[in-house]
Image (tube, rainbow, N blue to C red; front, side):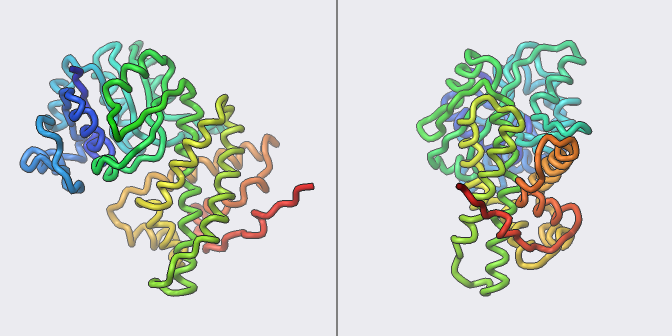
Length: 349
């Protein structure tokens, strides 16, 4: 039996308590300073306030002040914070994790640099560990997985990535179930880039839903031609961006495409895309969704910013990324939705 400590009691971090505990491991769920009510509710009811199922019996709950107790003798730490908690996790949690412990993060995103580089979060945390002179095994989860469907035991395919296949096999043995299926890859840059790049593109596809509601009425039937057209363009641009990232294994592209699909059909990015498509600007959409974390929009803006820098250097052509540029104009410049359909067409001799 392993001891699994999950730091971050949001929906995805909490959802991973299910396969870990159902496999017979000791599971300790630690809330951040923002998760106090979640931990209190879970202690009282054995259920996350946003789930429709109880936690497996035996999950233990900790407030952030009890972090060091929760980390004692643990075999695996799962980082369950959102992208807004990346720096906090690096500054507060990493220094407290026992030396040589295995770490698995579910946080998806990229950080852009002034040079136009896009860095996955494990790379940022590795820099922090180097500063601390500390050794931890940093690994990450990529792939299409919504928390509430994992809790419902819907068949789910993900990929764990890290530098050491032996370590990844160990983590897989802890987490895999008959409904949670895990591939392994040592291409951290490729996997983490693929699942982060889809954020702005999922928004772009969701725009078409809102546009059609605006044109045909809120109760109109769904129109799939337009969604499919933007999905195809999104996949094309994601592929080019992964090549730009230098991802060595393009099989990871399909991990990102699967994540793109599930993001379009559920979640916060879909909601904000629909509102924008109906005619709201980004400030109005944010106000409509007050209290909803929109981390994917931050990642989309970072990716677009990096792409513009690389274009200025002559390393790529902005004409190859019309969908990303339009999404960025909507988010950054408050431009109205006007999907550039003709820019998606091509001529192949």
